[in-house]
Image (cartoon, rainbow, N blue to C red; front, side, top):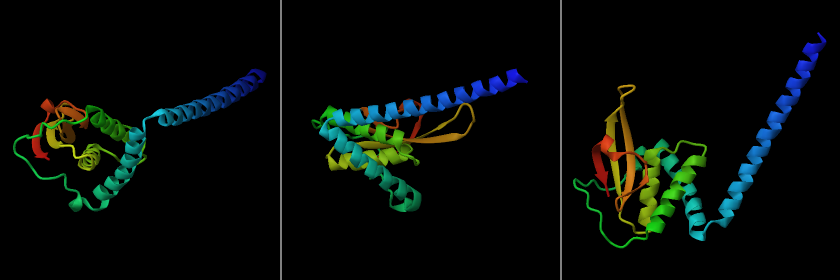
Length: 172
């Protein structure tokens, strides 16, 4: 009986230690993220805040006003203009969309991210293409849809293997 009581005390100590360890790791991660945000360039900070606002907007738009959510005009053939675009800006936009999608507490799936990319590309006058494709899942046998955004042959949202999908529509 005495041994059993000691084991209970050890379990309590270990449980308290584990909880404090998790709390310590959470605080450490939070401070690290704040420090990294502080060290970012102004453009990346601006894009992160703007993308967070756009994520809230697209969530509400796709949730309640689907008819108003238009990707753009459909194009039968890809025709992205070959003007000089800052690759660093394109990477910053992709970074902002990925980072916001990782941390928002609501649904921010591929179609939301593609719409956010569309809005950001329009702000910066960057030619873009949004692809909507479908494939049949090998595991479940169901048809899966996906949307991704391309700027100058570089994926900025919906990171996938486009050759796996049958492209249904291209928007620009």
